[in-house]
Length: 458
Image 1 (tube, rainbow, N blue to C red):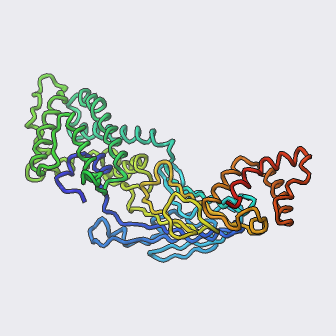
Image 2: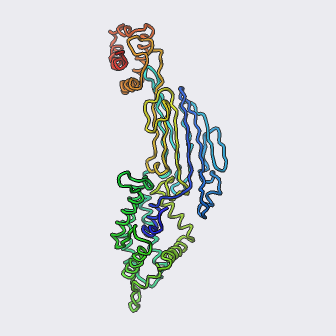
Image 3: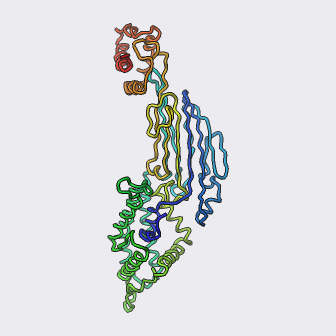
């Protein structure tokens, strides 16, 4: 967790956005196997990794079963669903051309959206075999189109709450126009910058740069402190808490004394020292937190409701599976076993036929996390019977074959296949010479030429 001396540095928004959470974990382990006829075997295991700590924040999370942390519609379309307090196991067999249903889904009330992954398996005839294409996208409930609107709403919510907190603390005896204007002109742009800092560092909060040895959290804090310094609040992450609290005390006193004007012209204008009670030396944050809590109760009925309202808006910046404000971190371990020879994958190779992907919930937002793999099953019925062609194809030959067929229509491929069947029956490409006077056959033979050139014996 972040050292205590950094806590007051970023305020409510920055603390929620930049602190690397020490949260419990839900791990999603998906195993997909694709058969040669396009049938898909799917098993997904969701595991709740309970926190080993015993603090009051983790106790409620540890007590409730995993089903209470996930959407009620989880498992729709699967033949089998097994539950325990710590695990949910989904499994099913899906015939060709049947979409794989969402196997990880969590209902989110904030935007009335649903997160689901979209899987696609496609088979393609490549004349000497079948090409298999697998593509799957894990999506967040907060769609990209909502991101800008959600950011603006979060900033408006935060600035509105700050104004309300000041009014609640000092009552109806003051004119708040100057403070409200300062909040709109200074704080709102700062919040936007802090969001951008979080966004640029969010995937590396706990990772160290191999050259600078700084984590994303350390870089983010440094950049955030520079932005906050532009307001006149000079904080230093390397200084101890009393030093930074003294800076906060001076800054708040000077700001409020300058921006709050008594409505009664005869009333004494407040001095910076009058606001020192908000950040007392013995317990620097206690009085400030209490003032914010009073404002939360007045605005929302309770501090818990205020927190929920803030978190709902924070989802538009962090995503549903990001942290915070999710109560758990989500980690994904996905694997797919393809038929035949694996040609490519945008993940890690597990074997000659399988690939796997490891990613965190934060990486899903906002554009989703895409899994892709490609394989080929070769058919010796044509390849092994035509003596001018190679009897076996390696991965390079298969890729060259696919490249030659990329712009060939299904109808032309079918016509090519009929010619190749005749060649396989005779055992030689000499059969292509027959009937060359037919314009349509001649066109097909010309299209077939580059394909055969990629497969000829050397």
